Image (cartoon, rainbow, N blue to C red; front, side):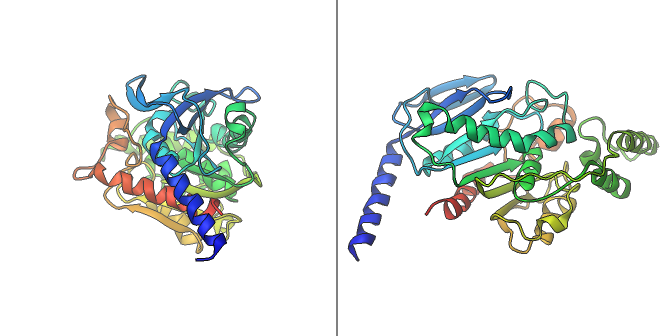
Length: 342
């Protein structure tokens, strides 16, 4: 082994040993330009202890002293009505590999405020991702730990929509209306969310008629939405909302794009969303396939106390084994390691 390779091997071994001893730190930085808070998970020399956040209990070093990991940042865009805590197991896996992980709270579409779910939030999310990068970069605790010339983005569901956008995709509200015109019975929850469900009775026709009337009223804008941040260098879209995208815009993404699908997703029918992206994008990687998983399969920990339709759509299908999630988190993390690290 040459001297250069030996030095690199030693450096990698030293980093691995340091990270093996590091805890997952947890802190919150202020959002920029009026954005909500940005939750940051990071390698820390602090001691992990129980941290309670609402109904969630995490093991983390709250405000623990940061230590340098691999020098790279990943931004996580949460799903509709989401919080940082249902992504904390994935964040811990990423921190274990040396990444700093930042999770912005998307305005009008988070666990505290769901007043602007859908296209109003989708239009803002990519810029909120960029400002989350800025917030971490300008915080004295983290500025010295990360270089933001190559940033990763992970998004799930509505966050997957943001991920596809920052990966080069373009979409429009009118494309969503067109999709619902053609496929509302087959992809009903993607068109109406948690408002109601089809039950196979005489009221279904009324529900579809009302839903399409509202969709046509709210989603007539045919203007394309797109967004690029040159700092974003790798993207993973997990069970993404994708039916409103121009799939041609995703055929050759300017950055490496990976997709995670769930075969039993009843909220976003895979053939119209994740599978449509994989079919359109030849270079895209199928990072993980969860054939027996539902829409909430990737949330870990899963939100407790779900009821009604939310429980049906986010809860685990019968027979789904959550013991496979650490392996899925590892695959997602490895995708970013391959594309963000030297």
